[in-house]
Length: 283
Image (cartoon, rainbow, N blue to C red):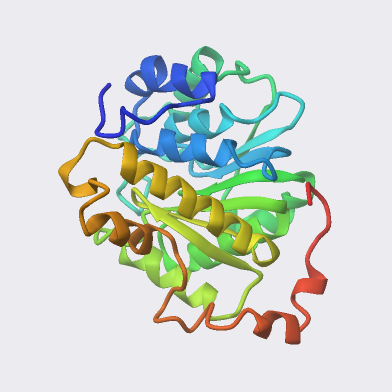
Protein backbone atom coordinates (compact mmCIF):
# COMPACT_ATOMS: atom_id res chain seq x y z
CA UNK A 1 0.00 0.00 0.00
CA UNK A 2 1.18 3.51 -0.87
CA UNK A 3 1.30 6.63 1.29
CA UNK A 4 2.66 10.15 0.81
CA UNK A 5 5.44 9.08 3.17
CA UNK A 6 6.88 6.43 0.86
CA UNK A 7 10.02 8.48 0.25
CA UNK A 8 10.94 7.97 3.89
CA UNK A 9 13.23 5.04 4.60
CA UNK A 10 11.96 2.32 6.94
CA UNK A 11 15.02 1.00 8.76
CA UNK A 12 13.42 -1.86 10.68
CA UNK A 13 12.99 -4.86 8.36
CA UNK A 14 10.06 -6.18 10.42
CA UNK A 15 8.23 -2.90 9.84
CA UNK A 16 9.00 -3.02 6.12
CA UNK A 17 7.35 -6.43 5.98
CA UNK A 18 4.42 -5.20 8.06
CA UNK A 19 3.80 -2.30 5.68
CA UNK A 20 4.08 -4.42 2.54
CA UNK A 21 2.35 -7.66 3.55
CA UNK A 22 0.59 -7.41 6.92
CA UNK A 23 -1.23 -4.08 7.09
CA UNK A 24 -3.60 -4.83 4.22
CA UNK A 25 -4.48 -8.28 5.58
CA UNK A 26 -5.48 -7.32 9.13
CA UNK A 27 -8.56 -5.16 9.64
CA UNK A 28 -8.40 -2.09 11.82
CA UNK A 29 -8.20 1.70 11.95
CA UNK A 30 -4.49 2.28 12.57
CA UNK A 31 -3.18 4.72 9.93
CA UNK A 32 -0.50 3.28 7.67
CA UNK A 33 1.66 6.33 8.39
CA UNK A 34 1.97 5.07 11.97
CA UNK A 35 4.46 2.53 10.60
CA UNK A 36 6.90 5.39 9.99
CA UNK A 37 6.33 6.81 13.46
CA UNK A 38 6.93 3.34 14.91
CA UNK A 39 10.16 3.08 12.93
CA UNK A 40 11.19 6.47 14.31
CA UNK A 41 10.57 5.27 17.88
CA UNK A 42 12.59 2.14 17.20
CA UNK A 43 15.53 4.25 15.99
CA UNK A 44 15.86 5.98 19.37
CA UNK A 45 18.82 4.43 21.14
CA UNK A 46 17.51 4.94 24.67
CA UNK A 47 14.18 3.20 23.93
CA UNK A 48 15.19 -0.37 23.14
CA UNK A 49 14.23 -2.55 26.10
CA UNK A 50 10.88 -3.90 27.26
CA UNK A 51 7.64 -5.32 25.94
CA UNK A 52 4.33 -4.07 24.57
CA UNK A 53 1.00 -3.65 26.30
CA UNK A 54 -2.09 -2.66 24.30
CA UNK A 55 -5.57 -1.98 25.63
CA UNK A 56 -8.19 -2.60 22.95
CA UNK A 57 -6.48 -4.86 20.43
CA UNK A 58 -9.60 -5.56 18.32
CA UNK A 59 -8.32 -7.82 15.50
CA UNK A 60 -4.62 -7.05 15.95
CA UNK A 61 -3.64 -4.44 13.36
CA UNK A 62 -1.91 -2.03 15.76
CA UNK A 63 -0.82 -4.74 18.20
CA UNK A 64 1.11 -6.55 15.46
CA UNK A 65 2.59 -3.23 14.33
CA UNK A 66 4.05 -2.27 17.70
CA UNK A 67 5.08 -5.82 18.57
CA UNK A 68 7.22 -5.80 15.41
CA UNK A 69 9.85 -3.74 17.26
CA UNK A 70 9.74 -5.77 20.49
CA UNK A 71 12.49 -8.31 21.12
CA UNK A 72 11.21 -11.86 21.62
CA UNK A 73 12.80 -12.06 25.08
CA UNK A 74 10.26 -9.54 26.40
CA UNK A 75 6.64 -10.41 27.17
CA UNK A 76 3.83 -8.47 25.47
CA UNK A 77 0.23 -8.15 26.65
CA UNK A 78 -3.08 -7.80 24.80
CA UNK A 79 -5.86 -6.47 27.05
CA UNK A 80 -9.38 -6.67 25.65
CA UNK A 81 -12.92 -7.85 26.37
CA UNK A 82 -13.32 -8.77 22.68
CA UNK A 83 -16.91 -7.55 22.60
CA UNK A 84 -18.97 -7.72 19.44
CA UNK A 85 -20.36 -4.43 18.13
CA UNK A 86 -23.73 -5.25 19.74
CA UNK A 87 -22.00 -5.46 23.14
CA UNK A 88 -19.63 -2.53 22.64
CA UNK A 89 -21.12 0.66 24.04
CA UNK A 90 -18.50 2.69 22.16
CA UNK A 91 -20.03 1.46 18.87
CA UNK A 92 -16.54 1.36 17.43
CA UNK A 93 -15.83 -2.32 16.92
CA UNK A 94 -16.44 -4.83 14.17
CA UNK A 95 -19.72 -6.71 14.43
CA UNK A 96 -18.08 -10.08 14.97
CA UNK A 97 -18.78 -12.68 17.62
CA UNK A 98 -15.38 -14.42 17.44
CA UNK A 99 -12.95 -11.53 17.76
CA UNK A 100 -10.61 -13.29 20.13
CA UNK A 101 -10.25 -16.19 17.68
CA UNK A 102 -9.54 -13.82 14.79
CA UNK A 103 -7.01 -11.88 16.87
CA UNK A 104 -5.27 -15.09 17.91
CA UNK A 105 -5.09 -16.35 14.33
CA UNK A 106 -3.82 -13.00 13.06
CA UNK A 107 -1.08 -12.98 15.68
CA UNK A 108 -0.06 -16.56 14.87
CA UNK A 109 0.05 -15.77 11.16
CA UNK A 110 1.37 -12.20 10.98
CA UNK A 111 3.10 -11.33 14.26
CA UNK A 112 6.89 -11.33 13.96
CA UNK A 113 7.09 -13.71 16.93
CA UNK A 114 4.05 -15.76 15.86
CA UNK A 115 2.46 -15.13 19.24
CA UNK A 116 5.19 -16.81 21.29
CA UNK A 117 5.53 -13.91 23.74
CA UNK A 118 1.94 -12.62 23.51
CA UNK A 119 -0.19 -12.88 26.64
CA UNK A 120 -3.93 -12.28 26.21
CA UNK A 121 -5.67 -10.73 29.22
CA UNK A 122 -9.43 -11.11 28.78
CA UNK A 123 -10.50 -8.32 31.11
CA UNK A 124 -11.68 -4.74 31.43
CA UNK A 125 -8.83 -2.30 31.90
CA UNK A 126 -10.91 -0.64 34.63
CA UNK A 127 -10.04 -3.71 36.70
CA UNK A 128 -6.30 -3.48 36.06
CA UNK A 129 -5.56 -3.50 39.80
CA UNK A 130 -6.33 -7.23 39.69
CA UNK A 131 -3.62 -8.10 37.17
CA UNK A 132 -1.23 -5.21 36.46
CA UNK A 133 1.51 -6.54 38.78
CA UNK A 134 2.26 -9.31 36.30
CA UNK A 135 2.93 -6.69 33.62
CA UNK A 136 6.43 -5.26 33.94
CA UNK A 137 9.06 -3.40 31.95
CA UNK A 138 6.81 -2.07 29.18
CA UNK A 139 8.50 -0.21 26.34
CA UNK A 140 5.34 0.69 24.37
CA UNK A 141 1.89 1.07 25.94
CA UNK A 142 -0.88 1.69 23.40
CA UNK A 143 -4.27 2.88 24.68
CA UNK A 144 -7.22 2.21 22.36
CA UNK A 145 -9.87 0.72 24.64
CA UNK A 146 -12.88 2.42 26.16
CA UNK A 147 -13.21 6.00 24.95
CA UNK A 148 -15.05 7.45 27.94
CA UNK A 149 -13.26 9.97 30.15
CA UNK A 150 -13.21 7.45 33.00
CA UNK A 151 -11.48 4.88 30.81
CA UNK A 152 -8.86 7.34 29.54
CA UNK A 153 -8.00 8.52 33.05
CA UNK A 154 -7.86 4.92 34.25
CA UNK A 155 -5.78 3.65 31.34
CA UNK A 156 -3.23 6.46 31.65
CA UNK A 157 -2.84 5.61 35.34
CA UNK A 158 -2.44 1.94 34.38
CA UNK A 159 0.18 2.75 31.74
CA UNK A 160 2.11 5.00 34.11
CA UNK A 161 2.46 2.09 36.55
CA UNK A 162 4.03 -0.35 34.09
CA UNK A 163 6.10 1.51 31.49
CA UNK A 164 9.82 1.47 32.15
CA UNK A 165 11.94 4.59 32.65
CA UNK A 166 12.18 5.40 28.92
CA UNK A 167 8.83 3.85 27.93
CA UNK A 168 6.30 5.53 25.64
CA UNK A 169 2.53 5.77 26.08
CA UNK A 170 0.48 6.13 22.89
CA UNK A 171 -3.15 7.27 23.10
CA UNK A 172 -5.35 6.69 20.06
CA UNK A 173 -8.06 9.10 18.83
CA UNK A 174 -6.42 12.19 20.29
CA UNK A 175 -8.22 15.28 18.91
CA UNK A 176 -10.65 13.01 17.03
CA UNK A 177 -13.95 14.87 16.76
CA UNK A 178 -15.84 11.55 16.85
CA UNK A 179 -14.47 10.85 20.34
CA UNK A 180 -14.01 14.19 22.17
CA UNK A 181 -14.04 12.38 25.51
CA UNK A 182 -10.59 10.95 24.71
CA UNK A 183 -9.03 14.41 24.46
CA UNK A 184 -10.98 15.57 27.50
CA UNK A 185 -9.64 12.64 29.51
CA UNK A 186 -6.06 13.36 28.42
CA UNK A 187 -6.33 17.03 29.41
CA UNK A 188 -7.82 16.15 32.78
CA UNK A 189 -5.01 13.70 33.42
CA UNK A 190 -2.32 16.19 32.44
CA UNK A 191 -3.87 18.87 34.65
CA UNK A 192 -3.03 16.64 37.61
CA UNK A 193 0.65 17.32 36.88
CA UNK A 194 1.56 13.70 36.25
CA UNK A 195 5.01 12.33 35.62
CA UNK A 196 4.30 11.57 31.95
CA UNK A 197 4.08 14.35 29.38
CA UNK A 198 3.39 14.58 25.61
CA UNK A 199 6.19 15.02 23.08
CA UNK A 200 4.50 14.19 19.76
CA UNK A 201 1.08 14.22 18.12
CA UNK A 202 0.69 12.52 14.76
CA UNK A 203 -1.97 10.65 12.78
CA UNK A 204 -4.69 10.52 15.40
CA UNK A 205 -2.33 9.57 18.25
CA UNK A 206 -0.63 11.33 21.15
CA UNK A 207 2.77 10.11 22.37
CA UNK A 208 3.90 10.62 25.96
CA UNK A 209 7.05 9.84 27.93
CA UNK A 210 8.31 10.22 31.48
CA UNK A 211 9.37 13.74 32.37
CA UNK A 212 13.13 13.05 32.76
CA UNK A 213 13.18 11.86 29.11
CA UNK A 214 11.01 14.67 27.73
CA UNK A 215 13.77 16.89 26.37
CA UNK A 216 15.59 13.92 24.83
CA UNK A 217 12.44 12.66 23.11
CA UNK A 218 11.56 16.16 21.94
CA UNK A 219 14.97 16.69 20.36
CA UNK A 220 14.72 13.34 18.57
CA UNK A 221 11.20 14.25 17.42
CA UNK A 222 12.27 17.63 16.06
CA UNK A 223 15.11 16.02 14.10
CA UNK A 224 12.79 13.36 12.70
CA UNK A 225 10.17 15.92 11.65
CA UNK A 226 12.81 18.03 9.98
CA UNK A 227 13.98 14.97 8.04
CA UNK A 228 10.34 14.18 7.25
CA UNK A 229 9.70 17.65 5.89
CA UNK A 230 12.79 17.56 3.70
CA UNK A 231 12.12 14.06 2.34
CA UNK A 232 8.41 13.80 1.66
CA UNK A 233 7.56 14.85 -1.87
CA UNK A 234 4.49 16.84 -0.96
CA UNK A 235 3.87 20.51 -1.83
CA UNK A 236 2.56 21.12 1.66
CA UNK A 237 5.78 19.79 3.20
CA UNK A 238 8.32 21.43 0.90
CA UNK A 239 11.37 22.59 2.91
CA UNK A 240 11.13 26.06 1.37
CA UNK A 241 7.48 26.39 2.31
CA UNK A 242 6.25 27.98 5.51
CA UNK A 243 4.73 24.63 6.46
CA UNK A 244 8.27 23.30 6.88
CA UNK A 245 8.56 25.26 10.11
CA UNK A 246 4.89 24.96 11.02
CA UNK A 247 5.05 21.15 10.91
CA UNK A 248 7.49 21.16 13.79
CA UNK A 249 5.16 23.27 15.90
CA UNK A 250 2.13 21.27 14.79
CA UNK A 251 3.42 17.82 15.68
CA UNK A 252 6.06 18.32 18.39
CA UNK A 253 4.24 18.97 21.62
CA UNK A 254 6.22 21.75 23.28
CA UNK A 255 3.23 22.28 25.56
CA UNK A 256 -0.43 21.40 25.81
CA UNK A 257 -3.59 23.06 27.15
CA UNK A 258 -2.31 26.57 26.40
CA UNK A 259 1.07 25.96 27.96
CA UNK A 260 -0.19 25.34 31.47
CA UNK A 261 1.12 21.81 31.80
CA UNK A 262 4.73 22.11 30.66
CA UNK A 263 5.22 25.81 31.32
CA UNK A 264 8.08 25.20 33.72
CA UNK A 265 9.63 21.78 34.26
CA UNK A 266 11.11 23.06 37.52
CA UNK A 267 7.61 22.60 38.94
CA UNK A 268 8.12 18.86 38.90
CA UNK A 269 11.56 19.09 40.48
CA UNK A 270 10.31 21.38 43.24
CA UNK A 271 7.52 18.95 44.03
CA UNK A 272 9.78 15.88 44.09
CA UNK A 273 8.10 14.13 41.15
CA UNK A 274 11.38 13.38 39.40
CA UNK A 275 12.87 11.66 42.43
CA UNK A 276 9.85 9.38 42.74
CA UNK A 277 10.07 7.97 39.21
CA UNK A 278 10.83 4.25 38.75
CA UNK A 279 14.39 3.36 37.85
CA UNK A 280 13.79 0.15 35.89
CA UNK A 281 14.58 0.13 32.17
CA UNK A 282 17.35 1.87 30.21
CA UNK A 283 18.67 5.19 31.48
